[in-house]
Amino acid sequence: METDGVVISNDKYEDLLYEQENKYTDIIRTKVIMYMFVGDTFMISHDPNGRTGPTLDQLLNPNAK
Image (tube, rainbow, N blue to C red; front, top):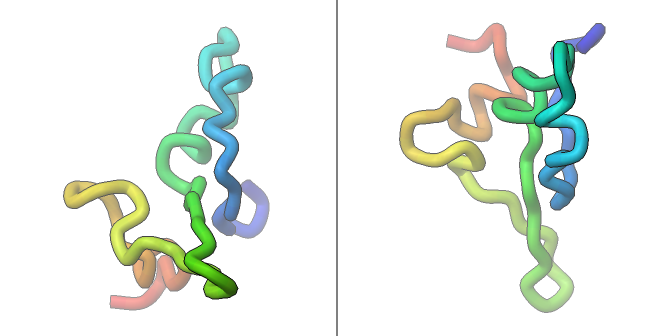
């Protein structure tokens, strides 16, 4: 939250997402980037939040145009 960073994790944080008055809800829904390994290659989707969400480039460079 302090640095406007992203979270690289395959955890869906459902235990935190549904807590009452959760200050992390927006971060969990928009800043968590899931990953996978294909063989020895670490891979992240170009559109980690789907077609309507920000692209990977927008998430990693929020000030870029």
